[in-house]
View (cartoon, rainbow, N blue to C red):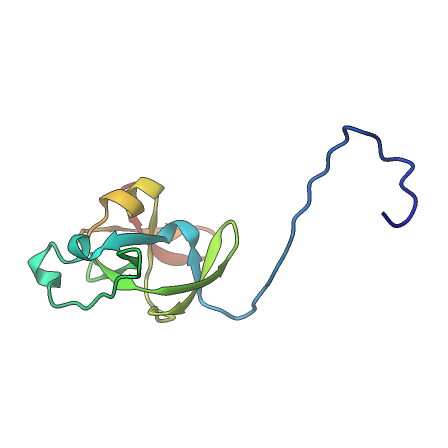
Length: 134
C-alpha cells in the first residue's frame, strides 16, 4: 500500500464503486425493459409468425417490447454496457420508439406480442411511457 496506512485495522471493511467503462450519447432503456424469449414464445400468436427473430447460441432472443397502436411488439435488440439502472441498446431500437416498462414479472413473464398496454405520464421527464401489468 502507498501512503500512510496507520488508520487501517484488521477487520475493517470498505466499499467502492468500480467504473470500467462509460459512454456518452447512446440509446439506453431501463434494464428491466430488456428480456429474453424463445422463438416459440415470440411466434405463438399467428399475427407474429412472419416476424423474423434470430436466437443466440443459448436459444433465446433478447428483446424489448415497443408500443404500437396500444399493443406491444417484441423488437429484437443487441445490447452494450449497462449500469444498475440502464442498458445500452446498440441495434434494433429507434430513438422515438416507445419502450414498455413495468415490473420484472410483467416484462419477463407475462408480456407477449399483441398485449394491450396502458399509457402513463412519466412524472420526471414529462414523457408518455407504456406500462405493463401495473
